[in-house]
Length: 509
Image 1 (tube, rainbow, N blue to C red):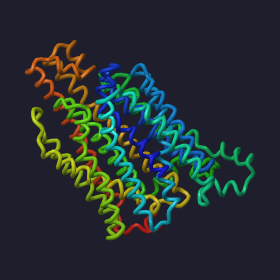
Image 2 (image 1 turned 60 degrees about the vertical axis):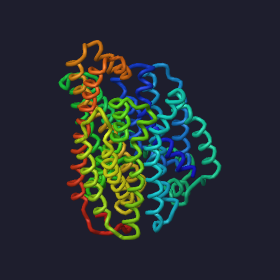
Image 3 (image 1 turned 180 degrees about the vertical axis):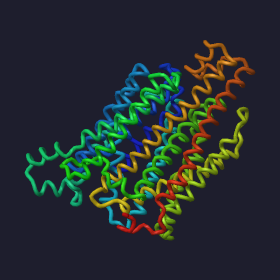
Image 4 (image 1 turned 90 degrees about the vertical axis):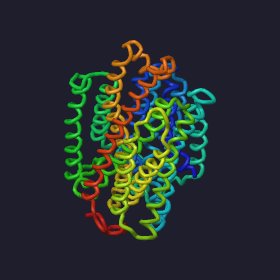
């Protein structure tokens, strides 16, 4: 329960502000920079998961979990005390460092705490909790902003985090018998262990990975806030990302194949198996769809239809509830009916494509068409199918020595998909919205609406309706981009295709 509460809180932080963004920016200003509230957290949340996994191999699971949860709790309190949007964004970066450690390690620990025959049931529980937290976030965020200050979105993490730290400190074993740190500690002295630990950390690979995430996300965010694509702030950063990615893979190949004492954060072995490569690509793609839908759906209902944050969050339920429901159904299909995971992933991709295509056809900005809830159910169920199947495949497709790194790699690329996905859709839709608003509003009024969307209420009825139509078109553009990500899951699934049922060692080649 302590682990589930911890992962629930840190994952919820990625979505809880989706319904509070307008309230935060109306108070602090800077609506055009609002996507940074998500991106700042997600950059470090996804950029360091494999690093935390490797640290836990070295120092032990318990110290790593407690340290990451402490960092998350501390900076959550500082986020709640922020006095400017820039300050809040910086604290979100630090908050994500702790959150990513919790997220990566909890999934790994369930593989080590329960026997293999119970993995489908427990992974269904964990993925269900993670999906539930994503959906509970907008609801809780909307309720808090409706009845109080947005600051409590962050401040409430402090007592919850502190109590969880105390409970895990009291009940979690000092060492798990099957964790790498236990075996190392039994063979070496503490001093020798400390020296070896420092030498084994892949600092270079970690910095290259984090740097590529930061540069790519920053470049796309600059495009979303108004910079031209060929400007140094956009094109320059994106161009600099390519050599960092290349250097990252070259370095991982070197430290993996040269028998270096350094333990790579992304072993080259992952790139030598088509199944593992297909898994990682699919994880990235489904992470994009999940994160963008969770952020976009409440914002669409709030901006286009003028609903309150809490009511807008309830419109996400038809998507959100069926993500964990889809995960549970997928676990049953693979566990009891023995359906190969690849068939489940393929079915999930088809459901996502169908749901997103139908959602993109919804263009009425005056009234809410109830059929879109059914389309959200299709997309949410598809996301749940793919998430559960890919998570369950990890201990079967990865070697035992790569269990920690493989688990964190899958979760990291899922979050990375959300990070880059949000940056991509906003970099495409925000300039689209800005350009069309300038055609119906004066530059000053358009800037005011983009800075604080509550300014829509000050427009006359005809102009307000035209502006809302523009925002609706912007969200439609985002959905069409998402359709491309969903379609890309088909070839990625074919790349990892096997009709074998998930059995230990059956799919390692």
